[in-house]
Image 1 (cartoon, rainbow over the protein chains, first blue to last red):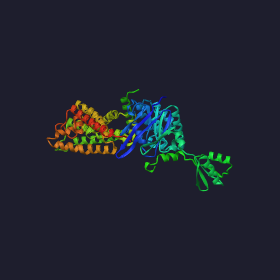
Image 2 (tube, rainbow over the protein chains, first blue to last red):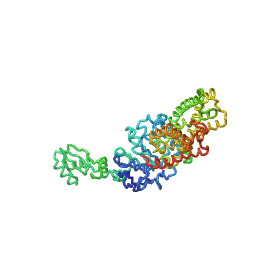
Image 3 (spheres, rainbow over the protein chains, first blue to last red):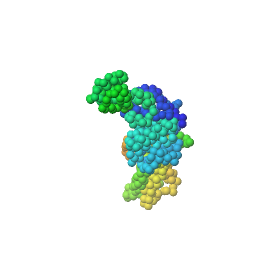
Image 4 (cartoon, each protein chain N blue to C red):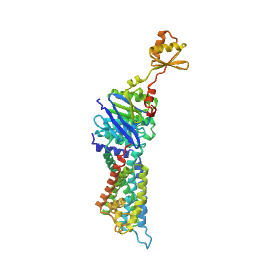
Length: 299
Length: 267
């Protein structure tokens, strides 16, 4: 599958006095899952709505392949999007909802049933959407996005309302989409929610780009640390300083920054230093994410 | 692959028939028109001694059957407006514009998609009006005139008028995208404002002709009869002009909706 690249170029949206999206630039490559991350109100949904032609940018542009979304002759066949878990007519059945949008993405009624089955809603096909749980609505939204088997998939907070089983299911599905060569963009306000399924991360806050890289690269920014309790903390501190690690006293023990728990353990073992406690205390991705998305004034 | 316009029409049609509201409204419409048809025909059939009948003969029959417009038009208007306002109420407008970003095509498909249901409403509404009105006219009045050519043309045009109202309803919904606002305005206009203005204008000789340009007056003109009075007492437009006036209301409101509601950001 040769899927198009998504290119966000200097995208800006002004709502009255509020600049919801501010000169945002990033690209989303095919064959990978890109996590679009930021706290609530960061401008994620507004960005996605501009990408999908629902909201007009104040400045800049968003391209799907070589043109804007609305300039594609059949955009629904190129991009499958699920934006809100609540945008269904409650009186329509799940199957009825898919059948409404089937003609415009050029698929048959049989395909609607097939997709409903793929998202695990076949048992609720003829049930009115008004009676669906939030998790079922998320699945129906995903089914709508997948109707035309599109090369680009855009999902806004797809894990909201899903049970743990559903979250695992979504993760596996996202990995599968990337493996098939599709371009996948998934927004979330929690890095932890998508950590297991994304290859790339784009972090925004207050409408601005804060970070864009592979998840692996972001991980290298996370610093390892260990908490150690030793009967002779002074000897241990000297050892740490020799290795180029920094130490700070913390209660009965020491926090060693710049080393993993395994490295501290190995060094102590080699030096014949007795340890009573050895615990990982890495600055994890979540803490790093929190740091990246802090309001600008506090940075 | 189907043409985008055909696909949009099919999608809009499926949106309508996959919900229940339109046929619930039809059921109410049938009951209401049968009742009003019976009541109005009674006023023509049972005229006290010494009182001049408001309408007699064929005029009475045609005026009774025209109630499908004069009284019934609120139903297709509401059905049509809901086709649009429901999109905003339940936020399905997002998905609708994702699969059809051309908002003009979306609006045109929506306007045309209500025609089949409008015609169906016209047929059942006209049948209900006749079923309510004809028996008393035939039994106590001057006759039902159901075999008369002019009457039959009026009945058929009554069906067309109802379909046109459904289209105008969509256009109203595109201007007033909030369903409560749309319904309140439709009820106020059809049940209160327009009847009063029409009767009021009819009292002033210089302005009497203007009443036929109001939407309900134009629709009565297309049918060729009005329950507000017989030929001669109510000014009506020629049929071709009546069609143009009605289409003008639909087009004017639709353009307004396209330039307001459908120009805005969605979400």
